[in-house]
Image (tube, rainbow, N blue to C red; front, side, top):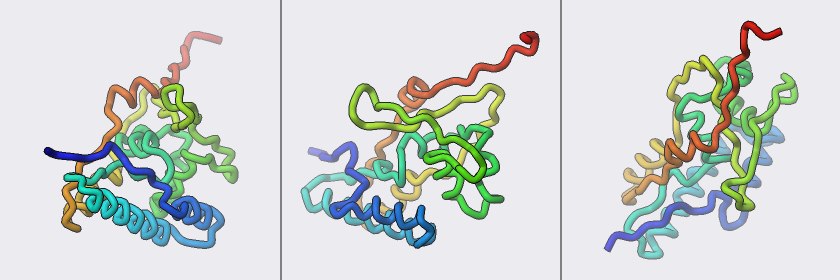
Length: 180
């Protein structure tokens, strides 16, 4: 019998992710330190799953902020208002967190947050703009799955499916050029 779970909480036993994020947002730590904390937590979570006797460990369940946001970035579905937030491609986390929290210095609002299927959990609502050109982006799922396998775990990716992503997204209507 093969056993696995669909996901594991990202936060950490002692809220390590929350503390690392807050430190990063204050500017006390850099993006690399945040990434190292995330990787350490993932490794701990995979160990817990393996020690519990599961055949496979979940990958793709960990997110620095929101899995719907991660999926949007993987698909390249990034609203145009966030184009100036990538700081010339030098800081990949700048656009990610601008989409999640907004960018007050540029007066750019975050993506809308709403309840996940009538639960007390929330997600960032993907925005689909008319005439948008989607350019596939990086996704931590691929990197985590390869890292788990390299560490000797048997990974099983947990992915938000395309129907769910589309059903929970919100479209932006194209303006009628003939209207006043």
